[in-house]
Amino acid sequence: MKPGVYIVSTFETNQPVKLTKKRVDAVEPPLNKSQLFIRDADLPGFALRVTKNGTKSFIIEKRIKGKVKRITLGKYGILTVEEARRLAQRELAKIAMGDDPIAERKTIQAKAVTLEQAFEGYKKARKDLKPKTISDYTRHMENDLGTWQKKAITEITIKMVAKRHREIGLKSGPYQANAVFRTLKALLNFARFEYLDGNGQPVLSSNPVEYLNHTKAWYPRKRRKNFIKPHQLAPWHQAVMNIKGPDKLTSSHVIADFLLLILFTGLRHQEAAKLRWEHVDLEDRSLYLPDPKNREPFTLPLSDFVMEIMKERRELAVNEYVFPDRDGKKHLIEPRRQMRLITEATGIQFSVHDLRRTFATIANSLDFSNYTIKRLINHKVSGDVTDGYIICDVEQMRAPMQQVADFLKQKIGIANKDNVVYLESRRK
Image (cartoon, rainbow, N blue to C red; front, side, top):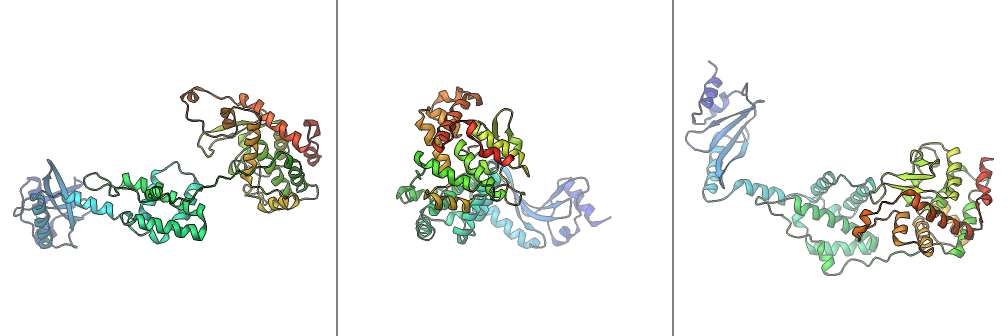
């Protein structure tokens, strides 16, 4: 008879035996069970667990707060039988005194979670994060909070926060400092309710970044108000068309159309740059944004001016993007060089977002309702329960969109569609 058979038989009859090195060495993996337990006859609650793959571990079993709980002490080989027995005696004594070793271990583990581990947990939990958001957060963590990565989240104090926020502000600027600590604030808010002690309470009693609120230490955010004024539209447009001359590179034509599209639609930079042909419906005269910044899919009507741009772009398409990059492999990135040339020619300083702001400013000047303006630029409509009952059809936005286009055409010197000759010349 093999030595392990006796042990398994003892287990199956639920009769404790004294655990010794000889008995532990002799036990064989269970054949018909995922694991078996051999309980010690001399120390109630002390036992050996054997898994199907042959792993042997020492455990204790005890009723804690009305429930029988099992605690792993360690693997056989790392612990000897006598070492495991002494450890079991200490743990069982704690339980007899009212302590909960499982809760203590959970508390220790939760308090040891590092900022790096919390960030990984945050990314896994937040399935809705956009790639750019993850990229920004990662850059903040690695470049600005790199020395904190291995620190436990419970070690981050309000003094550390105040000091680092100030340092980043002096080194990289107020905007960067605020952005980094907004990232940290979001991460630690997640960690507060994700990492709990053995009693189910947060190991982070508060978020240390809140200290910046308490001391009003956040750098003031000066909202940009730049836009292209009506009297600047004609020279700006002429400069854009100059980079679209017949002697210019194809990539310059793409950039000119890109800038004009944003001015005439109010699209965000990335929404326009990543626009795919599959989301442009020339028959319906509309484009579709499946995943914009606010996460609400959006269909936008196209004015006559934008339709001419789209028709030309369609004929010259080289890949799936409406605005391809120079190599024709991906989408256009921010055209800083050409924008700088336009500024040098006109003296008009502008960013891509300023074009979106110009569109919204014109819409406001035309006395559209706030609801209409928000729908045109795809801002979330909130604050009024009635808004939830309003279903906005793309056709309702077509007339306001065309009115903005007509205003822009008038200011840049295009009275009507018949005057849009320069768009046709490229195809001819």
